[in-house]
Image (cartoon, rainbow, N blue to C red; front, side):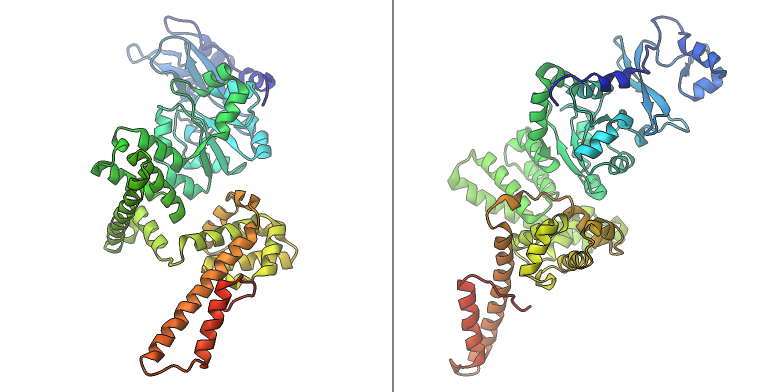
Length: 480
């Protein structure tokens, strides 16, 4: 995006029109209906006419409004949206639900934006028709608008045909933004990556891009936040979240429950502790520990709720998530190293071959990661790496499929670091060595309790060898 390109807006407005002048029961659409051989009842059913309660007469539903035709992806007119030209309290209205128009299932301008969304692999989602038109005018042709509704499962499924990355540019204080803050679970369920664009207070995307230009809007996209980061920021800037009161801690625990992994949760705790201590280093560490303890207590309570639930279908989803996450005894750093390696292997064939030259699929610690590494290896052996997403989608194991789908779109920025792959492989191997070392030490302690240990005993020699490996650089494949 750089300057104005009016082709998009011209297409968007080509079929638009004003809904008639002020006063009385307007006749514009009645004339259209007559020309199309529609009865008033049929035009009313189609949403063009409304019926007055006082005298039971029909009038133009979109009078005193600028109309926007809502088209299907095949460019068929489904309905209309209307923006007031006067002082109506309803800024926008849409065609009511009809057999062919369901606003929860459609997006404005998707028929024009779909090619750009697919090409750029992300969509900009806004709330208003004028927002879309202005963004297209300034070169953001991958923009679409909801129609007075939150992002529904149907709309997300529609967008997923073209991309799994969404930039949501809603007014900061709008109902749509509030709905976003409640939709984290839906986004995870639909396997979409959502970024929140922070539109300046008091502006909408239309005004923002017209007043500040395309480059400034590009900066807003660049500085967008994950839904969790946006929630944390809003919470800490709110009256409740400004101080660590009991109410603030309750809300903080609910936010922490949405973290994707323990490391991310630690980062959120650190942000909270820094804010609540004013950056005082001496107070940050004890507050962090207090937050961890509070989280563990909250986690135990949530798991107890899940365990004691009479019906598994009614189990608190947060509690279920906490139970699943607590089952892994692998340290956070090791788990993250595995996850990042698998994500890179699934997205990059060169990386996959490099990793599998240095370690086998069975060296991964988590069973799901082992299965995914085996799938990658099988695709490489069959020279079908490009078909990996297809095989993932056909996997019968729903847990495996959900895990793989997330890894296929995971961020790979870590690869820019020096020795990124080797460092993560070493992290996994060192952990396995530490585990073996601990097990051997326990065995020797049991032997020592029964009498003196011979230094030349095989168990002692094995222990010494493990310690030498652990002190040095681990290069050989270790046994499970």
